[in-house]
Image (tube, rainbow over all chains, first blue to last red; front, side, top):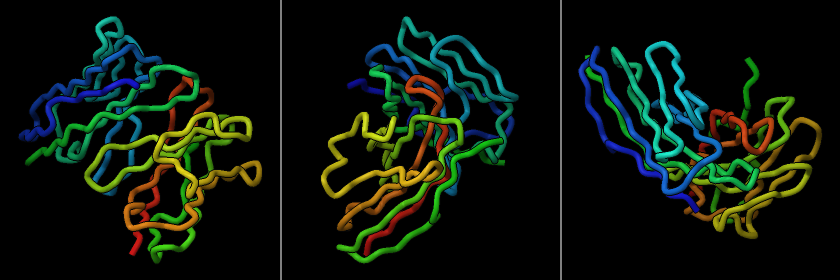
Length: 110
Length: 113
């Protein structure tokens, strides 16, 4: 199966700073998603982005499918952005078996 | 906005007991999934379910686990004889097809004592 690597594993920011999180895949993926896990453990869908670029408010994501990586950009970070960010991909087969990375743990301080 | 709902949010059970975790997927979705996250670790795929049968399962999903869609709206995960190592957050998810965005429920935190 595919391997998913996320970097950095931990990130500490001051409120207002920008950051870039990276996700590398060992093989091409059909489905690629970014999630935010909040302090209560809930997985919040951020982006479904198998290719291209999307933006949602202060967040944006870019996937370069041919080079097997995806980036999540957080601009003007806020304390509520704290938590763990996961990327996950499915390498095919048609049954959406998402393989998750180990996550990037983000702490935003006021 | 439609969402996947899971009950209960927390469950504590004695080792060896059976538990049933319940999920109501988004109504027009046809593919259903269970994932597990042991505290502090990554989210792991357990099983996918389509057309009233298991379409794929991981090596974690052994004989103590089973899934069922007992009616048109619910999707359940049963753990027959719980072990301490089954303690985890269990997530249900659903999607329209096998290659489109999967939406996750809020999770059930299972603690086996």
